[in-house]
Length: 275
Image 1 (tube, rainbow, N blue to C red):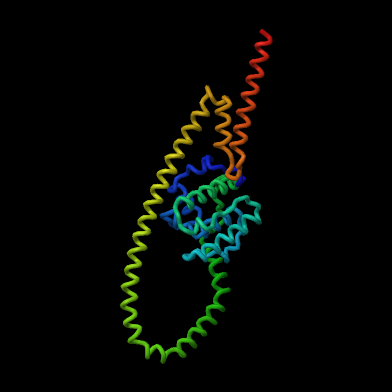
Image 2 (tube, rainbow, N blue to C red):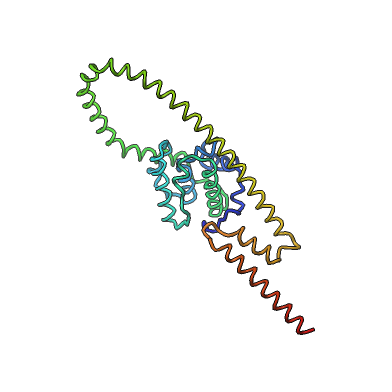
């Protein structure tokens, strides 16, 4: 099923507001931006709701902020995909960057897949909040022993280094002022970089919408009654409806046109011989 969802599938025309509403209603969350689902935790729980108990929720971190923690969530998701034989490769390196377009496309695919399994009907027996809380408790209980040992080690280290800290207090104070100035400059540079990236994302989204609109116009034209059975229209639809991983779509379309032309020439020659 997953490999049959091509880029011209209606799934990829679902807007971000509809996707956010779907997530919030199903999982009882309050997301306002697509990027807030970049950690992979939402996707894990959507699959857990579709296949109850299939995802080890104690391994899913809903508080993931760093790329490392997000990658761990996607590893869990990919393992579940493999277990359920869901033929979908997750572009982890792109998703953890929090880019709206990449995350929107993955969530559009996910909604299409989940709807194809459960018919778009919410599992009323599934309590998303309780499932998250239970998973979080299990994860925290396993990490508590490690945290306790780490705290003891830190306390010993602090006691041992207390005298040295007192001696270096004045030096640290001077370095702190320099560090604040450097940090402020870095914040300004990062803010500018973020603004530039947002502008780039907006431009990319406009370009994407532009080309999708063009493809949709071509699709409507090829579906019109007068030309829908024309070899060229059929060949174009073969390319439009090809699955993501199907690289031979162009060759198939060319071969279809070539065969149609040859058949037409043969029919024409037969008609001339008959006359």
